[in-house]
Amino acid sequence: MQPLLEARALVKDFAHIRAVDGVSFSVEPGAVMGFLGPNGAGKSTTMKMLTGFLRPTAGEAFIAGHSVEGAPIAAKRRLGYLPEGAPAYGDMTPLTFLAFTARARGLADVAGAVRRAVAATHLWSVAEQPIDTLSKGFKRRVGLAQAILHDPDVLVLDEPTDGLDPNQKHEVRSLIRDMAAAKAIIISTHILEEVDAVCSRAVIIDRGRIVADGTPASLRARSRYHNAVAVTVAANDAAAARAAITDVDDVVEVEVAESGAAAVITALAKDGRPIIGALTGRLEDKGIRMMEIAVDPGRLDDVFRTLTTSEAGSDATQEAA
Image (cartoon, rainbow, N blue to C red):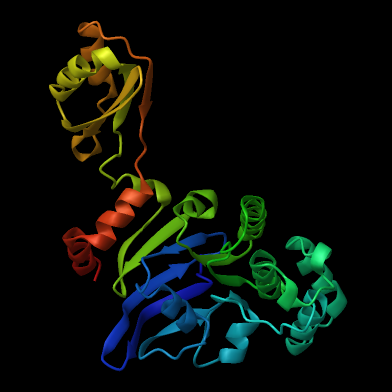
């Protein structure tokens, strides 16, 4: 399947600072790619190069097969972009702003396009208020409405749920999932739960370079908590339970958290190996009653921190390069 969005060895320098350093990836139809990284990692700069807002120092971006730099009009016809901050004309209402945008894009059915975008982003209740009077969340939805106004093949969304309340976040995530089947979508986000909610793939960038690329499940499998087992026991059994669990093969670390009459003991597994059978068997042999037990699939936040805040992250950068 041909990708709808491609980044080929993108580089961006600002004076003596290299903000993006050889970033390459592609996104196929039906895929939603989460683009993750700490502040200053190069996410927004990469997205600005993908959309033609910034010219790369080196490399090239393609939208639906069109070079963003070589054929910008053809590329941008197929692209919807929600930038960070999503500027709009504050004295316009959502209806007039979207109509203006539709006419600027040369859409044949301006009224129909506006109606569909307003309905999809749930803007009818504020459709005739000046944009400057809207809350941050509604302003963000106006920005999303202009991005999807022309039903583009590719969506590049920079923090699409920034400023939204939990109900609004749910609505926007549902909209993204509904649109995903026919589009290639890239979402920059700091909200790791968003990756699980809508993304089929996640790319982590740090210091301008890709340090991880995979499905959310494959990234969780890189967490030190992958296949960790959390067992709840009575507080007076905690010491004996910890000692028993520590002796289980492939248990490399044990964490204990006590709360009142109970204690949660978490056993981390060597290389993510399955340990639940051996662990529960050992506790049963010791006559220790297990009140609750759960297996951890792994934690994206743990992987994110490991790759972006430690020497391990620096090593991973070199490997990804």
